[in-house]
Length: 115
Image (cartoon, rainbow, N blue to C red; front, side):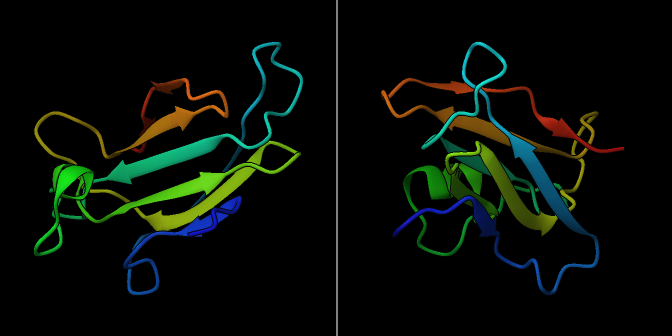
């Protein structure tokens, strides 16, 4: 599948609490937009569960089906459409972002948290 700077996660169109998340990824200098960076995001469903689809395996089983991949363009920007995640335990609703740089280096970022 070809990745683009915009993705819509499953169940967005039926969701009660829709979210549009837009951002920009920069090079380490903090000024230059980072091109061709993949942003992988995943989050719990409105019930606070990382629910997998039937027959899911690997990361799809662990992270559930509410996930997506975005690849930045020359301007470093990205947008994804999803729904507000549910809270679980003492955690605020949140979205997990993971960065994959063109050189293969990857790392986790702090979660996007919602009140």
